[in-house]
View 1 (tube, helix red, strand yellow):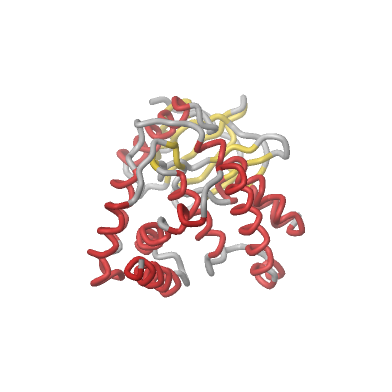
View 2 (view 1 turned 60 degrees about the horizontal axis):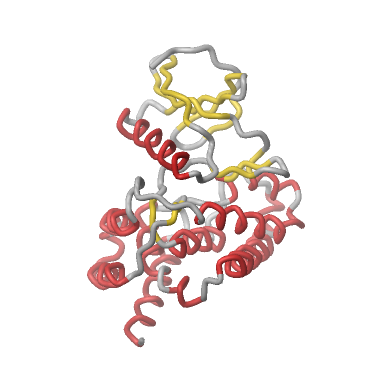
Length: 273
């Protein structure tokens, strides 16, 4: 672990700030409450994804700066797809297709060096035990019966986690990655595109047309992914229950009742089948 000079801050999220380091590198500097174990876990996941051949920003090393830990990454040129969407909302369908094409490329890669699908969802569903209540056992029973797989899955694939310069797109923030059936990953992306939640800091005009933007992007994303993969609606729908149940523990503002409605609808369909 080394110290280094860093440049201007170019981004930030809940858990870290991102700084330009020059020479095609950026430093993701974590906030004080992030544990060393969590940071090193992210580094291990990033290296496993790269070893599998999936598109990602390479992990270049561990850094300490002013008593804070960070990871040095390859810098990906461009801006997030969400920023692109804010600048050109009329291209929502095109962004949706590009998102699907990148997601399909990710899923073409295989690995067993990431957390496996069942354990990934089991942990999150257990953390959702309180809002799930007596639904918990039925959700876990459905999880047990779902098909497995060995595709690299991002686990949190949405427009703000894709950096693009118009010619190359690279997913970032692989902390939630797992290996498994790609339908699980696609359904989570679909739920995030449908979510009633709106990220803070968006301009007021974007809130007003968010339903139109989300609808256009979601339809294009799902249509393009199904075209590329040949995946059926049934293959996708079987993952709605565990994905919605697992997302509950994230406590996203405005989502709890919406997610519980999705869980109840999926349980009703499962019981009727």
